Image (cartoon, rainbow, N blue to C red):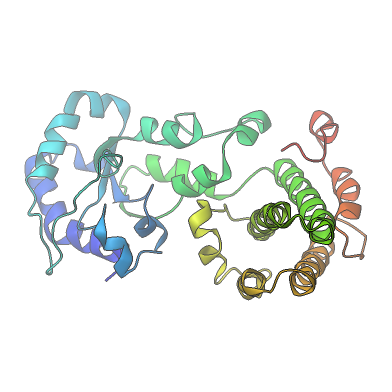
Amino acid sequence: MNGLALARAYYETVGRVALQENVPALVPRMAVGLAGEGSECFGFDDEWSRDHDWGPAFCIWLEEADYRAHGARVQAVYDSLPGEIEGFPARENGAWSGGRVGCLCAPDWYRRYTGLPEGPETLAQWRRVPEAFLATATNGEIFDDPSGRFTAVRERLSRFYPEDVRIKKLVARAAIMAQAGQYNYPRSMKRGETVAARLALAEFTKAGISMVYLLNRRYAPFYKWMHRGLKGLPKLPRAYEQFRLLGEARPGAETEERIEGICLTVAAELKRQGLTDRTEPFLQAHCLEMMKRIKDPALRQTHIMEE
């Protein structure tokens, strides 16, 4: 059983009844689920994840007034729940992982990841929020939300970046992929600068994987899970395998071949989405074409490498 399924079973088996019996007036105003930090919130947990911050647990989100007035009482109900379910022992939180489950203030929770109590609204606000934080704020599952207020914010964020912001990020990723992978990696190898080459490859890989998420209109998670999360994305479905092969390629010509294959695939998808009219695989050539499609004048005038 993965963490999300365990969380739902824990809530439906013991949590729901305890909340209805002890704080019935608050139940219609609370949201319950599991989301936020942790591999289980993305559905990526496995047997190696169970050595820390894993076990029966769920989140209870209250609006600010309810949290200030009743949060301690709701937390006490949560703390009274049995620690073990279906043979899985109670969750043990590490020193840095407190406050991820139990009773939480909904506006503070969204503020933690986006800087704002209901997430970004303006283009400037959207650009300031790290992509992995938006992935964290929209992952997991909501089990109950009678009022719909918590879910409404989540659904708005899940609709993805405003298109101007998405295009600007695509431009920045294309520029990094071209500079780091198509240009600086082979030059560093020819000079014998293997450390510089490895750094260039790392920059290309991170930008390239982020590019795939952006083309799918999905937020890229924390770097540790970026490659894993490529599985099942509808656009560029071969990306997971392409980056796996890149990671296993021999330094030099084989790596350069894998880089070019990824860039060719990305260039074709950019054209397919109407973001560029160009067909050549060198991604730097696509940047100015994409910048022209940004409607906001201020954003269109920023440097191609600036998000």
